Length: 422
Image (cartoon, rainbow, N blue to C red):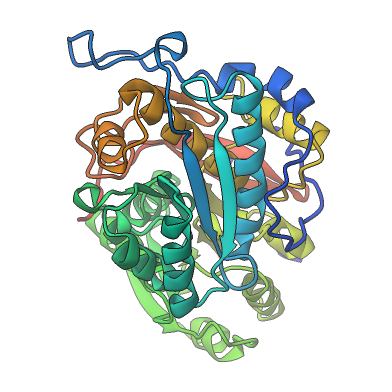
């Protein structure tokens, strides 16, 4: 097989991956005694007062709530969003129990429940109303706009929503109580474009699908930034999420007079495996295939040898600068099955942000929680630190760039792109 480009300077770190979780939506939690011990540094809900006053900060010992923080997860457990929401729903529960083992929020344990939205807009709206009727005062939302938008329309400020895995900036709207836990698509696609340019690449093609804005928007953002930086995108090739064969697109690329150096797509497994195999069979294995967080979410390295050298954006990776590994170790000890590191860690982040807001405000009133989240700065979470003040609901965070080396994801660098299209 032809070898794809692998950057020279790489820092290899091991991922701890457990088997995929089941679809049980029971809210009965695993034993998290071990998790509480190993993630103590990640659950401090004391938030430093960054406003200059002293009345907006409540340390855990100073805040006594009379109503608990009640978090509902509108999770897609069986359809396209399960790659994030299956591990995410388990990870959120681990973090809830870890915080509760440390004393809870405002002296009360956090309550937590999961509703399966089944990847369906109507089911999402029903689940959202059920969560509100059950008295939740905060919601964690699904990854895609097709279900995220109906959730937001139904909740509409009645509770803060943190979209745990969504990178769609259109879902972030603090005026309606909606925030992302992650960077946005413009950020991650721009990071990949700037990385490609930094490697000296000047030509690229993209593959995009109009089935969801994630699969069309990321290639558009990549094209804008790559072109602005002096590169040339010489073709965009359409596909559908229902496709299982990409020979037409591969043959068109093979027929180009000048072969591209890079192929960028937001495609996910198992489609990306088929594409990689067909590129290799067509003698195009030297093209550097680049992607975004869907590569990480759906475990692109499981494609085997054809994935070697693939480069992609990720939300986090275990390093000495974050608490990801300690959280994963604690979750495993508690019996949780978190297959995807990034989305387990982002779910933990979402719970920590909600707990920090309730602690700082010493309130679980939804409107108060929304305004408090919108002003948070430098909150300690599993993946590092997060700030929402002045961000429009999309936190300022690094993009982690990984590559597949020797069959495993390997750290390349963490960066924040300079050119981010609006």
